[in-house]
Amino acid sequence: VQLQASGGGLVQAGGSLGLSCEASGITFRVYDMGWYRQAPGKQRELVASITSDRRTDYADFVKGRFTISRDNTKNTVYLQMNSLKPEDTAIYYCNAVRVYNSPVNFSWGQGTLVTVSS
Image (tube, rainbow, N blue to C red; front, side, top):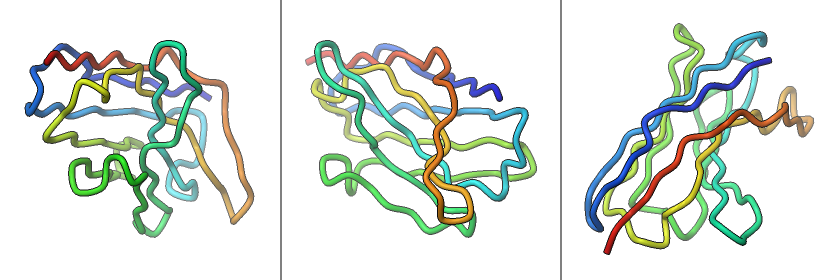
């Protein structure tokens, strides 16, 4: 299984970025997928998730600012990030969350770095 995240970069506070993550080696459409992030010195945390039938859920700290979506024809999950804050600075990763209601995680990819300047 490979999870290749891209789209990170440097942006000013209040700006926007769109992340993409292409998965290979899995039957993507049956997996609930998530975006996670890990800031320096902090634990990795779940930011947003989307089920196989496209129900979404967000951490409180990104609600109203981030939008997760997926394209099963491209085996890709997206994260649109608006109104970015310096505290959103982190490495962002995608991974599976659940499959057939069972928790699952694959090996973490390299992630993509998002840096928000104040």
